[in-house]
Image (cartoon, rainbow, N blue to C red; front, side):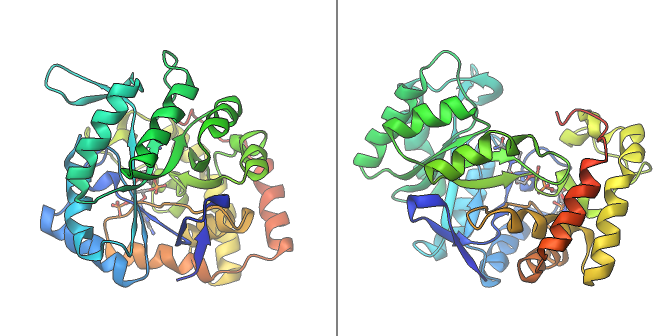
Length: 321
Ligand SMILES: NC(=O)c1ccc[n+]([C@@H]2O[C@H](COP(=O)([O-])OP(=O)(O)OC[C@H]3O[C@@H](n4cnc5c(N)ncnc54)[C@H](OP(=O)(O)O)[C@@H]3O)[C@@H](O)[C@H]2O)c1
């Protein structure tokens, strides 16, 4: 598969990565542990070299799964994980309760190294900004971990342009992870130009709009209570119906290109910049193969113009969270 470099960091990964979160967190349970281990290994056979997880996914179980699955491929694949949440009384990180204090970052690094079965974390993202800790202290702590050989590259997730700049001045940021897709383009105004100026790679998460942009979700689709979409304002029956115009656009373009809506949604992201590496999540081989097919779809400048003009006329209904 085509490889891409994440900005100026020199970190080279497959043009599409694999988002592993839903294998253990935020979706209805699927398959057993061994099925997911096999699935991750089959994605490596297909050329995927970039895997996304986080301490908080599970918590812990997703890192354990990814670490086990990728152990035979040590040195050939890049594993990205994330720190940044406060532990509860049982020591489990709580999403929505940020903690990026230096001692907490160091503790998560030590524990993630063990769960991932690696000698160094390839890419260590701050999962969410922590208003109580200056970003310079966060970047300085990751810098120390890099100097100690425990981390290779520093990343941020859902950061502002100001925080990105301040962090980058202390420790170069290899990649920013942010939600970015045809139905969520807010980062284009300020964040994307900042990444371009500083030479930071962009890793769009939820690049398939949490599944919506594949066209396979409609107002009759139901979500298990364990599925984060059951509480997401964009996944109410009304919003799903109202946003159908986005799917009609994707279906029109995919018809012209003999592709699928999911492939056009990913090809559109890949066409934005050569340093963009989306991480679609999937747990089914036929979907993985469909998604990887996006890498060979060429969208011309006329195609991109047509998509951009059409999408700018659609007012997407529902908050993204
Ligand atoms: N930094 C952050 O704060 C943050 C936040 C959210 C996510 N992430 C990362 O980004 C990754 C991807 O995000 P995401 O899972 O939220 O959204 P996504 O990649 O946009 O969509 C994943 C959903 O689409 C379905 N899907 C995938 N390919 C499909 C296809 N070809 N046809 C039909 N359905 C398809 C998946 O179903 P199946 O799984 O059943 O195949 C899953 O329900 C996560 O795994 C995680 O690593 C990061």
